[in-house]
Image (cartoon, rainbow, N blue to C red; front, side, top):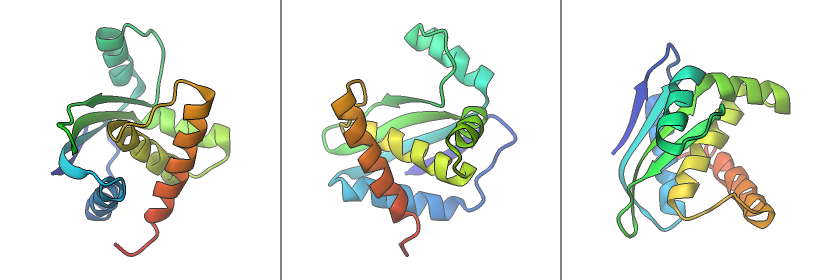
Length: 139
């Protein structure tokens, strides 16, 4: 089950459309959807998680906790709406496109994709682009 939780004033416009899209992203990677929780928050909220669990004193747009079991995807994806908004401006893209990129990014991590090396990062960006395009297809 894909759930959306809000720790800030932000709210997705059409949760059902996003839920269908995330489900399609999972399926497109030959995985089975389990319990996936998106938690939308602000910078302070995510910074506290970053400090507490990862010991990183930095701002970030996303932190994901993977609880997947074999081929079944489970996890929590925390997204700072503030970071997404700032990154969208920095990269000259729409907020909605940047949000979908980050949402797909979390799922892709659960599917086994990494982004620590240049080679891994290039593949991750390609996969993000592929998954973002799926949002505009009738699901």
